[in-house]
Image (cartoon, rainbow over all chains, first blue to last red; front, side):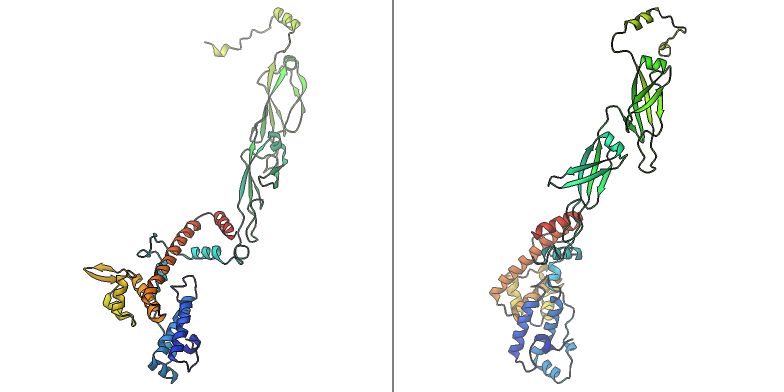
Length: 305
Length: 105
């Protein structure tokens, strides 16, 4: 323990009144119950109280000055201050609030939140900005082939979004540090963009494969033909075999969606649909009226008893 | 927990008449058991505080009730602040950051 005269800031010849005044001044400044947020107050108050206990007692002071006792004889036992209770869960008799546990994390938060104006937030507190999330409606073909889009945020900021080839409906894209700005030099939050893929009028996606129904004329189906069909990558020529029928399937290898992981493209499956001529064809009608099929055909045979 | 005699015994400066006056003025509110008052650890700490204020810092009896009323308000406010911070402490880190940012303004 320090020299009691030094602790109270008085010299060795100080009068009782000088000692008392010195103690009063320091006690006002460091009493822990009056300065509950001062972490050092308790230790300091103990020291000045011990010094005062020793020096205010004329007999003890005399013995200390004569070197008969040392300052440690005046040390105080561990004392529980009022603030230890008043800030704790048992605080009820003088307060209207429900009590609850006091804990270090809270104290730290308090300190961060209430440090003085000049220091606070910018210098003492660093935090990541808030994450933000958006929904981006996107065309079927943009997803199939990949695309770049610019989202304009409500606050006017433009956000570049690269839609990866083969992205899926409801897929979430994370744009690192494109969210709200950070605090005190902390990094910005992330922006999350959820893709909502719009359905296509005739392409249907199943995993990496594309399914499409392609109409063919009676003549193309019956005689066979080389026709152009749409794919997600643009029109492709395909051969319709002679004698094709509605429901017949053709496969276009590697004309589907590129798999994001394997890099392999899916296929496009074409289902043919034979359509009769849209306009009147009197010659065809005349032919059919006289036509005698070689084989009798009943396509509803399986449907009827 | 202490009885009146034990409390007076434990604090050398404490005068019985003063303690009785403080109880009368409701600066201290002891519990009662079998007709005899007793002091919880917290009330004992409060008595020690009052003794320091009165005997050592020489705050007179009238000023004492003003000081204690302010001290009580201080600790009430601290309790509210602590419950508020406890509520904030369980929030998302982003929420905490937003609150601190708003307070910095």
